[in-house]
Length: 302
Image 1 (cartoon, helix red, strand yellow):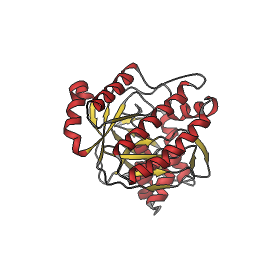
Image 2 (cartoon, rainbow, N blue to C red):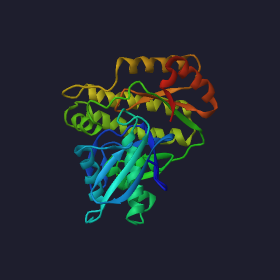
Image 3 (cartoon, one colour):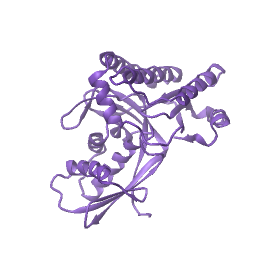
Image 4 (cartoon, helix red, strand yellow):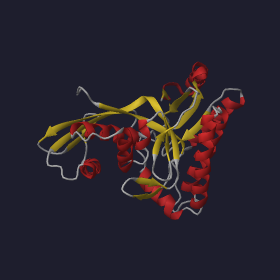
């Protein structure tokens, strides 16, 4: 079903990872600061309609009680004295819950639509902070390059580089453990969590400098190191777990091989098995050819 004037928000991919919550006061204060790239082709569009009961539809499917409760508990945090019943209709133009940060665009589109429907008159920065209550990464979907610092402030960063990303969809199945639960487990049980906090803070500061200096190779190196340490917190948690599969590791090795052969590409992964590839616009034709030669229709431009 198509609706006019839907709120549209694009997913973002962290190049310095957000992994761990510190507190809500009332907005999210992350355990580590993060930086993200906003996608150009993968997004969520959302519409709110007055209704006789609260309902949540995703991709034309009425969601079950668990999913609906998650969304409407967020709505009630934003609109605490709500008397109107509403139907929320969302479409994810990407695989949902498969490590492609669909929650980031989902909550960004939702706060934009709540702002419109309930005439809240929120600024972009206010919407970003409120979106982070729903999903920690969602606040970063309001800027092309976004910083989310350890004080909970969200702001725009800049570079002269024409950065691009592609995703290799190795799996579209739903995650076995949600990002929220996985983060909590790592923070509570991983013996290297303090080291992760130190590395996260250093990655954040180093990445800001690399972006400002238009140093693409340093951007890529920081991103890869930060990515793999995040996954190390999962492997060292109790119980140990991982989102990465044999196919994920094989893909990572393929990206490294392409780089050894002179192609400027770098990998990152999130809470899922899929692999994202960072490259420059000027190399796009060659990068996409090499990726599609091996992964065919699994390759999508972010």
